[in-house]
Length: 430
Ligand SMILES: NC(=O)c1ccc[n+]([C@@H]2O[C@H](COP(=O)([O-])OP(=O)(O)OC[C@H]3O[C@@H](n4cnc5c(N)ncnc54)[C@H](O)[C@@H]3O)[C@@H](O)[C@H]2O)c1
Ligand SMILES: N[C@@H](CCO)C(=O)O
Ligand code: NA
Image (cartoon, rainbow, N blue to C red):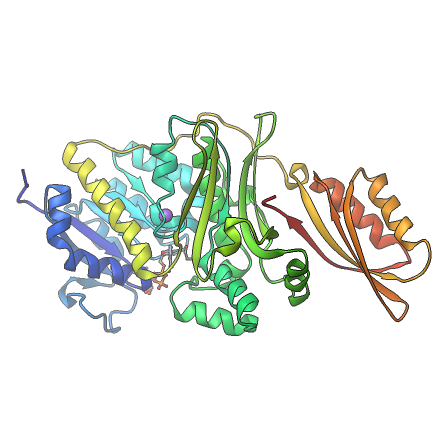
């Protein structure tokens, strides 16, 4: 039976995502009410710039005082789509203290301070949901938290940043330049307010931290995630990948160690074979593989960024949180009981593609091969292309520890015959 008294919602932020949340809450009001069992009313919208015209947003609801809005006392759910650490963190904490549950799209905040936020929610009998924080519209947080809660997840691997996938895809398929592709991603609402977060891998690292924490029931913060962005990827890397039948993607990889005693989380560009399903993920789409003991391999695919797709995830959380409120219950909180430690990048084991500029003279290949052997890194293939006394040597290794590969590269740099290390890229998905 439908309750007539509405649940009141405060919206913090009315940018790319917030304006779509407001639009869908208005246009789908009847469906939302039927699905929840009570009407939901947009009771206030906190913005920074009230002068900005927002189509379809009732002017009388707009305020610049977000703190007063969350302190009103009659708000049931706060939707935080401001982004960043402060004032978002303070506003969310205040919301809990005043009895509201919170839906957020803020991966930066959850990845930095998720444990404290969950504790604050629990202390006040409130919910904290953030499906939109990881891979936009794609259901991932709740499938991991709820649907897979009876299984044991061993690996989460995927493309979790739409902006960088859009850039790599445009560069690869249309030959567009890096800045041109980034400008287009920004205009389409995919990039963060400061796109450095996207291209330097901070956004993907935040998502990797959230995924690893939920998947392995432990605590992982963004500081635990090894991060390399897109800015070092060159056209030569992309061309080299093509020659190997691969493409370059920015991947987030969270793994349980073989002995089960620790986990790792990393974000970096990697070559993947064109035959791998992730190779065909285009534009701002995201795709994530989850591997678990009982289910085997699951793949989640869909729009990972953009106003309306992200609002879809926010609205899904709003419905869940409102249903919990009406039932006088809360959904699942933090699950970090395994306390598995996060191992450093040096312990990650994978394959590598190394491109060296070397002198083209007798014995160089043998010297290079010896350095790999001395560091216990086994070579899979070597390709050499010579030109005017210089040569480009491309070495692909078998699986080796990242620390061993780093020492190998350090020793290679010391060789007189090695003029430079043009690129080092990990090879994944084989
Ligand atoms: N855009 C996407 O594709 C996407 C996808 C997933 C998650 N997110 C996350 O959603 C959140 C919002 O992203 P966005 O793309 O809508 O950003 P945005 O910059 O378009 O919107 C944020 C809005 O918050 C406003 N704001 C800033 N400080 C405020 C304050 N103190 N009070 C009220 N309003 C304030 C800004 O003026 C801006 O309009 C971020 O956490 C982002 O990481 C975005
Ligand atoms: N800037 C992010 C938004 C989605 O989280 C991206 O490009 O994926
Ligand atoms: Na999601």
